[in-house]
Image (cartoon, rainbow, N blue to C red; front, top):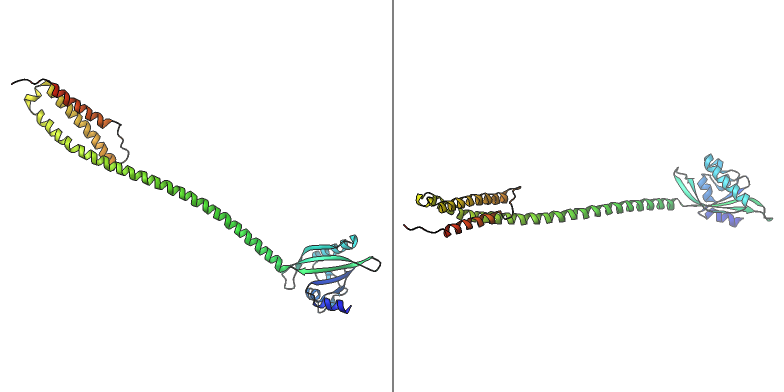
Length: 265
């Protein structure tokens, strides 16, 4: 008994022995401290109902009655406990039936190991894992948004390249239109001069040729103006082949004029 008492005074786990009515018969010093008693002897003869609220005490009493009724030990149960500082704690509990020399159940022996820190660590780890999972989801969403932004940027770059190409074509068209416009102005002056010569205008073929060339120049001016406007504004479109058709007609008129027989003076 002295050996058992010495063990119960120094072992950190809470150990207690109870009779058939759930009264404490023997407790460890750690159990007495947990219950708030001055010493282990003060606990003897009392029950859980003397230290805990009715609901908690009743749950412990029911477990002990079940152990004694079945004769089977209860192991590895985690119970919620109220700590001396008022906080809620947790204990890993084992309860086994006590028997006399004849094998008759005469009470229970309980061992409670404080696992409050372990439980708090597990809860903290669970919260940390939940936070990591949340951050992982946010990271996945950020990566999706980044890929979307990358695709949008790529599309914008392609559009910018196309726009720059169009700008180059517009500048080329503007320059070409400007270069064509200068000789047309010279031709227009020449046609105007020839049209003022009565001797030339009296010839029907020459008059028709000059009229056709004048009309061709007018149409060419329209096309050139459209090209130049299209280089500096939007919404201007040209019909395919319009410029080449105008030049072709002008050439035909000139050939027709050269083909007419000349008259002597």
